[in-house]
Image (cartoon, rainbow, N blue to C red):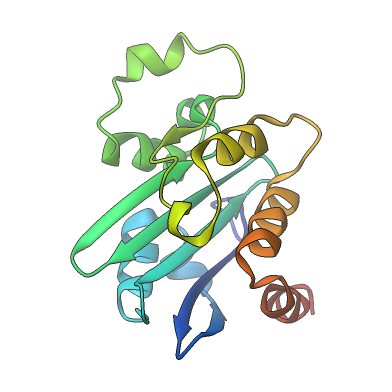
Length: 161
């Protein structure tokens, strides 16, 4: 998608019981602050979710609820190589030296940010730690579990076109 390594980014929110998804253009998708600002403008019944997939290597999910932002980084080790992952680690208050000591794929941040949609922290941890899944597959699994896989499919068709 762009030089920052962004594969795709979208914002999802619920209005009157239905999911609405929109793609995020390259500018705002290149940084978490841009993604956060874009998502904050699209809050529905329970806030919004913003996803960005980077370099087919990791994803970041932001949960925006009013002024509050919660962050999930699917693989903390990517904070050493990718600016957007480094930004996520900074938002989480992670020590760069501690991040450098992590050897395996390990999620960081708020593993409970999808719990009210029925995705437990243990499920998020297992999904993020699965070395067989690419970020788009992880995000698709999340979408299926919380009910916006059909809408995501439509968004992805637009992204790939």
